Length: 516
Image (cartoon, rainbow, N blue to C red; front, side):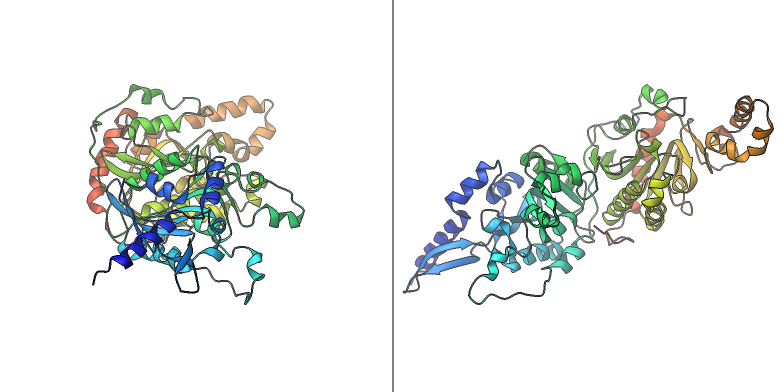
């Protein structure tokens, strides 16, 4: 009366599934320097924590007596596991079976991974290695073949998950078509040098346009980390797994929870005398904003995102007194900190991330305004900039601005929502107005300069006169800036902000809907 025979059959089928695409194709995967799908799962998750769903799904072959003679598993592995003891959902492409293409997949497995994440309110990690789309046209050359009207499986869930749970995409091989769309429909994405490429269509298809390109030339990391399609690039798969784990450590499991505070042994009152000289007196000189960030946040807590896109703005997840926060900081090494079209897109997406997962925002400001010139106009900078400002004004998370130096023009004015309580402070190096004095003298004093025998001397005299009223202290006298502080006090002030902000966070969907 025992069911042992059936249990033995279950175990046999599970063992066949473990073989993935077979010895030859697994060997080919390894020869390319890539891990297999199952090895990736083992390295990403806490040891022994993976609970697979649908392991027996695939294509079986049977003899005349109905006995299973061979089994090819579906090329998508789904299930639950843990990262740092926190439950997560993973969905993994198996390139050893039909190159990860959808014509060898079972759509229900991708769907259940997305649905598990949404309905169990768990972070989702997509390990991508293949097209994930329509597969090969070779599938039409078979008995009973037919074409179909395209549909994107689970796309409703892909969209919903962006406003429900953290989604991470790890590109671990060539990713095209629907796989590429899934890669960028995430909150954080990572490529691996030498392994990952991303494209709408691969080199054989693009060759029909007369463009003879390698995978790397068409869709390598040098392209996609600079155009904003992908956030990060690393040297190895293990490094990608580490960064994915660290990204999730700053976020709650879903929008229905709050980011957790971690233990902090970095004193709130810690200060650095270097901050007194961090900003040069010469307004034309640049400074190292990343060092400033390191000095004022918890030691070792800075996790930068998207460093190679929109480079005049640094974006990072950080901790302040143990509290996870979202930090933006102007980088004067690029456009003097001015906002380009790319910078505006980066800011918009980052603020949406902060709003979605209840992260208070710290904004370190040195912004001379939107980038100007013909190229900026052709890039529709003002439209992208206005969308970024709209995002900032619709955000409801607690917000703190620290004005390091410049605040000019429409972009500078968008350093915070001025209609909310301004938890704002400035350093003595603050410099603000509708436009920089140096750039406005020639326009404002055109007639006087034209009539002068020595226009350069007159311009210098005018500049000296205007500089006399340029001091941020005069702005503070009129209470048009809330506080001017000793730069060495910044960390203590931010720790106070973190404590005030913590009880204001609400575990529910935010005011903004995150978009890819």
